[in-house]
Image 1 (cartoon, rainbow, N blue to C red):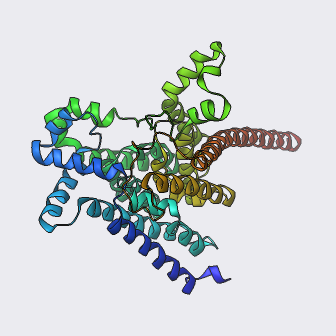
Image 2: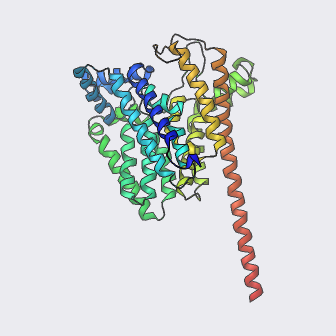
Image 3: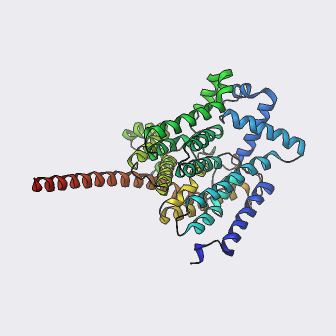
Length: 417
């Protein structure tokens, strides 16, 4: 079949994805994230890392990546290259590495090249890696690298990759239980976990020695923020379903106020807990593709049930979606592309995303953006519950099957005796 080998079509799509990423990096300004990163690295350069953490409670990135990007800022000043360009170029390159790892991990899949090309030209991956201006795309790279190394039984190297991911951002920790359950034997698990912990500690140790309290508060204590306009338009999360799709807040029965408020305040913990539960329920999926699917489901559940991590954080798990059924990654890609692109077009005032990203200046969003937002939020929330129910049902069936086989073996043994 035409998609079974990397012919002209494949390299054309690879070139197209590369060209669009270069366009985003060089010619666009990115979102507020790029500007916030510039303020962060300027603060580190002017007052030092620890004092910057103390002066800016919103500085929540790990010490290593903040210090590294401060050097990139100094280079940008010397070279006359905009910092936002150098920042986004790094993570566009991470995305290229992610694509290569995806190709390697799909080596036994008959649609290997088609799925790899589909990821590379996925508008969501292009926007979040080369336009957004944040480090989230690196999480997917290090998680895929860890999977690839574990698939080759390189436990120590996989532990190093996992530890390095924490130098850039912490959300890779959700995948840690999946890796531990994938490994066979407590010795390999202990080696992997120890190496990951040691490598992670190396990246944090100098800052922890000088200011453990502020690192614990700013970095370890960060759990995302709810993103909404000053006009009250929520960008993502269950409150979209509760208050925009079902009913406005003032129309809810008074007896439901307390449980709804509790859920809205704690939905990030609930999403995190359900993600871990799903990983445990799927612990028998010991293949590489099963591990990748489990990681995808865990992150989709987390992001689908919380207000605190908005759309850019789908970059953490985006390449893992291609290990799920086509109905999921096709629908998810279409809905997120429609929502994110229409929103960014609105905020930039330009279909080519060339304008200045102005979130604060848009108190209300067009009906089309709200429509795509609602569809995307409903889809991911529904998938989170569907994945959870499916995992529970499969676990019950598996236990019944084991019980039936044990009873049949006991009966057979009794007849022979």
